[in-house]
Amino acid sequence: MPRGTFVLVDEVATWLRDADRVVVLTGAGMSTASGIPDYRGPQGVWTRDPAAERRSSIDVWLTEPDTRRDIWRERLAGAGLRPRPNAAHVALAELERLGRLDTLVTQNTDGLHQDAGNDPDRVVEIHGTNRFVHCLDCGDRHPMPAVLERVADGDDDPHCTRCGGLLKAATVSFGQPLDPARLQRAHDAAVGCEVFLALGTSLAVHPVALLPRTALEAGARLVVANAEPTPYDRVADAVLADDLVEVVPALVERVRATSAG
Image 1: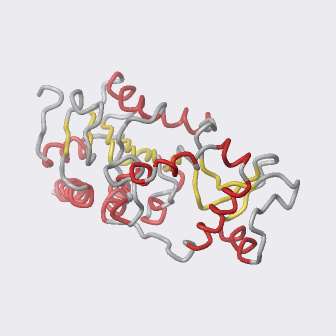
Image 2: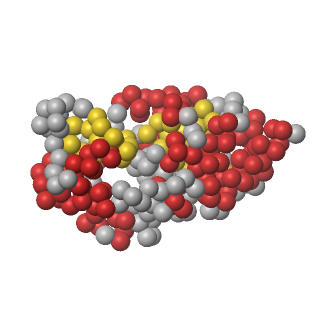
């Protein structure tokens, strides 16, 4: 079948069922149904407010105390609104339980894959996590709620209690390098997989956007499911246009049913 052909969910499910190593890459579109807006989509955070993208720069965090205070206050205000995994997250946890999911690489920092039941040891949070805070100087690490308690008590620009360094959510901001070990693990998983699923990601942010190419060059099938077109649509083995909360559970249910049969 030529690459770029739209194929039925049943066929993709067969690929998943017959594979020993499936790698999944998820992006912001994975969590929109959980109430977390994406960034670059038509209604994305940065699309509607280009100034918001600037606040994601490490240089801004380092040099603008007022911006840091605003962000800490916003985090505190939203602390009680913890999103929940949606049906697509739950389905990927089921794919793991079925023995098909080898590695889950996520560009998201929300921790929803772990909440849904995926083994944290199989999840590569390539852009870090917003559930922890770390010191930019000594690397000391604390759960986000513990630091937000300090903000609630009046410490509106919290610094490290160990060394006095600047604290920041343990996420990768613009201008910060990705963790080499995590990137290498994602690369190795792509090289070794038989099916690579790219879900809810524009595949426009490098170097993560190179992972599907790596998988293709190693002989894997590539399946893309995203609300907007991606640079890989023309070379993918399958492009699924349905909403992720519908198509991912449908795929996994077919894998489960045919595996049982």
